[in-house]
Length: 492
Image (tube, rainbow, N blue to C red):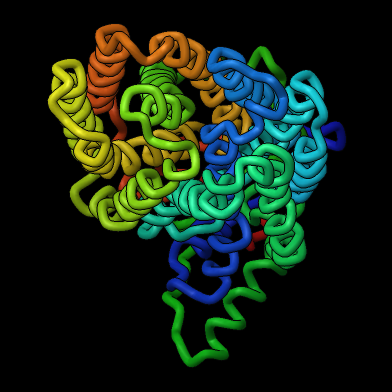
């Protein structure tokens, strides 16, 4: 395998950094990583929830289709942000990007709350989406590279699931910000205040992120072995100071790394299409199926409750809040099983069960035989499983490709998934119509169930058994070179 070396063509490095990181016990450092980086999904969930309840629609003169388009514009912004910042995350590092992208989101979301017309709102929703899209690429890369392999599955799934903590926060906030008894406040100020919640939370997190180090794995592949060594030394020193012992890392766990500045785009294409075509098919399938279902349901659920069940806008939070909590609990409870039972079996189970329950709810909805409460309960059950499955899609695409392409892999698969998924809000917004005909929307629900089942089957047959394995064991780094007999060199 040919490698593109940096201009200085540095000497290969014999590194045990990966082995040192994977043998670490769970520490306060790892909690800092989870809290500091996991907020991205909380912010995204908050953003989606604020828009889903469309408190701005009346004051900005928007109909259902335009509200749905607002969600689509945000998702398209995520696509652009992921593509632009994904390659930068691989070239410039994870830390620089997860500071920059959060700052972009904070500014744009805050300005969106000052919107005076529909077009102003759309512009800054797009920019806020760019920030969140960039967050996904840098954050998933950093988390997978900083968390020990035996915890990676459950942590990644749980962190991705915290999207629903943000959604629950948004639902609780909207209860106070969009009160039916004070519609003038809801239309004039309530929804605007909602857009300021995310930036206020993000300002605190930016300070915390400053103390999260660059990924030592990324540092080694870019020739910064001293900085990587210093970072891991500090983590190990803190662990030993707490009285815990660390297992010894042996020389046979070392890898010979030829540092790379960047990967040419032609090589990127070759990796995805020629070297790992089945993994590419797997990643695209999982990301597209979960994105379509989630974007379709959650950018339109408020319209469904309002139009088909006559639920007042200010009361929708009562129905959504427990639903969001169920989505949050799913990844927390099911996540450890992805590390024990295994990736493929659990992905198939979660996708499949979600599809079955969603199809049942569609049939009952079409027959007009359930109340809003029962419909939400069925949604809770379906997405208890779907939430864990959707989170595992991000885990899958971030761990099955070489380290040097991790940020780009996430960005490309995320972008394709969101392009397809962005059709969901528009399609389902149109299917809701004026709330008089249930058949079109029921057909949309059946389609969503079929899409999820297909994704689960693909994962079962094409999935990778990555549980408990080091990232370098799942996919060799592009910078890894064959070590000559009796090799000697610098070791980290």
